[in-house]
Length: 533
Image 1 (cartoon, rainbow, N blue to C red):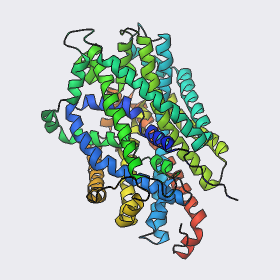
Image 2 (cartoon, rainbow, N blue to C red):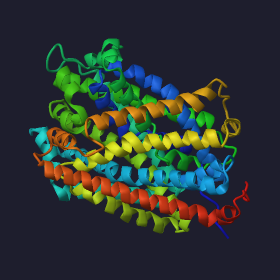
Image 3 (cartoon, one colour):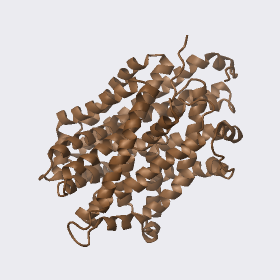
Image 4 (tube, one colour):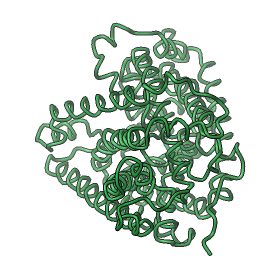
């Protein structure tokens, strides 16, 4: 007899898990440098526009698709997309939408994990280095280079993170993931609030004109002039950040929502997830890195720190701050917790695929996924230039997430039907979403995504990113701060990245096709719907 699927034990556990899924490195590492490099207050304007017209609608769509798939015992995108598409298409036509959903979900979970877990490992390492004062008195830039070049250290902290993730996921949804996030999420908020209080009470420790308040002014003062001069670039960056920070287009919101009951609320829960994430990102994340960097490094260096703000610039601050070892450890442990609560969701997606599609017991499936992610992550861990990571993040962050989000709309609204979707969204809902949100979901959100895809594609073609032109290779080498490398090695690294992507896509497509045929083979053979719940 088939065992019933695991479900969330409490409403609080569900909300914290969903918030933990969304609250990750994007909030405290990616958001500050995106904010700094895109004009501060100029960035916040399109950011909030994208949140309203893109983030909230897609969040509701993904919650609803996930809960619907859960009714049929599915926690992965292939069968979910198939089930919703067959209301407008014949089963054989719906099969190909399922394959697209399945390959995208599998690819994002696998490829994102391959490099995202590495960055979580950096956070674990720097927590230790802060407590021991290892980087104190050193050039923090060179210290980071030496860490990335230390293969044993990189493998240890990355491997430690993966083992702990495996232990948590193997315990299941209610007894594992839910219990871990109930501890980690409140702790994360406590650390963040402590650091915000410290940041806002720094005063001007180096120069009178450098202060944390100046950093807050940079963030919150609307800068229409900068926005008007760089409108398209900043707007694309803001929309991309919304996708990344809310964990949209990753399949993991669908997966978590699949463990709901068929009448459990998704409307208010989805909004609560967005609210908790935005509080963590805008109020806490925005009040940490940039104000601290403004106070100790000055506006010019803070703005130009880029992706190195968290791991190269801020350590320089902590070594000059009273009780810097403690506050440094708080900062990097905060990053580790934030990354962990997101990573646990991508890990669980892959385990659910084995558990539901191939009927491999969860604990065994957990360690099979561990091996798979270790194989995928090894080329990135061994790459001392971070060029493989850079190229892969470009494809996953700029394309896969947005394409999957677009297919959410195609399947969840256009094929399933807006009226049926609206009914499904409001089943057991604690709030009533106004009807004027329908056109936002049906037309504005997908148009936003097409513009985002088109803008990124145009930018990458212009800079030779997609075609792997000499211009892109030279740019990679020029911006590669970690080591001086050759163009030949850069081309080799990018080739590795793209070969990995192609292999993962093929495996994802085959897995989705076989999973759908296995359960709905009779439907596909007769080309008519036979299974309804």
